[in-house]
Length: 423
Length: 174
Image (tube, rainbow over all chains, first blue to last red; front, side, top):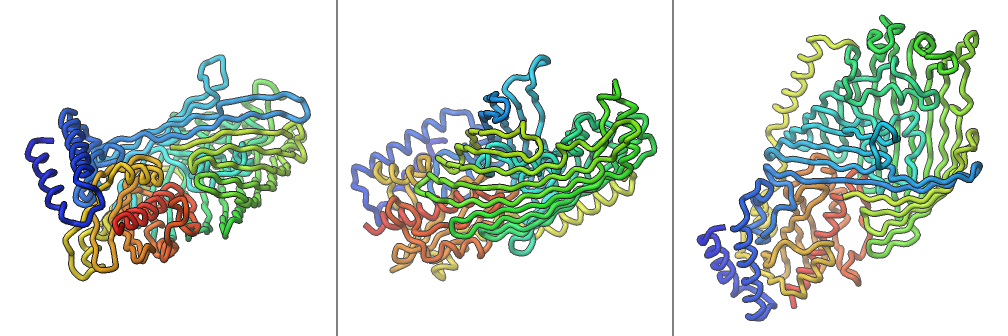
């Protein structure tokens, strides 16, 4: 900030002095002195790209520090995370875990072009001897033509379900993410690709695009549907791509929408030669709704999917398994849904307390091969009841507690405590 | 689906079509000057609210962070005040204009929305919730504002700005 600018600031201040004001002359002088000190401090700092002023700020608010906004050329940091404690009813065991810490950098190149990213570290420690995992959850560029038209490209989240795109802990109920949007919709589900999205009309948003797809040859978990076949932008086999589309309608308190994702997953046997020439088309879709009226908070979701050529995928899993015991039947159809209700019993200032209940059903039907002993896993037919409470101490910080009861796999019955945040 | 050149062409066409269709509009929905002129029929000379230490302290309590400004300009006629404020939603500044009459919000408009998501906060179905809102004890709004799924932080920023506009308005009339 140069002398001329200082003079301008002073001139503007004194020019405005005759206007209505409640401050005394001494107070005004103190304020002006503070502004001058801040301007001098700014002048001493090298001009950082993130400190470019908004075209409106000086005119309307005489703002001094614009570094917190994402001005052209600016970069900022976002993040979220959650800590969970779980005590299992059957075994009596308990675990405490920094489930995830995610941070991201967002950069604005100009008024239209931005970059968004999230880097996730799960379970605190990442090493060959630990369960931790580090991953890029998102890394995509967005070109905003208008509210109605954005073009994006890179590694981005697939707009199927509610949780996949909106998974920061303060935005959902319960310590653990719901199982339907974990085992049927494999949250946090991202693919490499390109898409177009925007809001048209008043509140109707769309998102369509072409992306990489799952690779059925990589299936290695028997109770998580298609989840273990995800590629997450890691040298993804891309012979077979997918297309997706989503429509959501948002009004204050209301969300209704759905999404669909479809494409072949055989990848011409790139990771399992037994799938050469096998299409193994996967189609996943969902419909969902959220309704908030007064203090009542309702949410429901239904998701379903099919995996074509499931018999060939089962055969491929058997062929690739080190031992027959490691093999399992591939998922053939996936269905699941939940209903959830919460009531905000106490809202005062930043504090918000909301008990909730949720009922989930999961039905993953597998393509059995009785001759080779590959049968339906009973844990793939599950019913889960969750009773709990979220206590927001700030809109971006939440404490959680809940009890979960599983109808089939009772080893998962637990009491959980959680702490989540986002910024 | 196997990747073929025609898919690239289709995607490129879609992207270019989108860009071409959207070039007529940007993120500025109304210039702040135009908003002031619309309210008053002309643009009156701005007045200034000096943010004394006390006002700064109370503004910080409303915003959850210190106010960035030390003097706040506003426009006024005999009974209406217009406040143009900026606050960060998730990561970008939202610029909004608030018209306050007799300590109540007459209407609100989002003038510039820079985030790539959460644009629903600029539509009348959301903004009409602020009509007639006034400050309740604790500098809270006298009503609950229904949020928009996926726009939590933008909604919160709009609420903070509404409270700040009403608070500034009260201070300007003392």
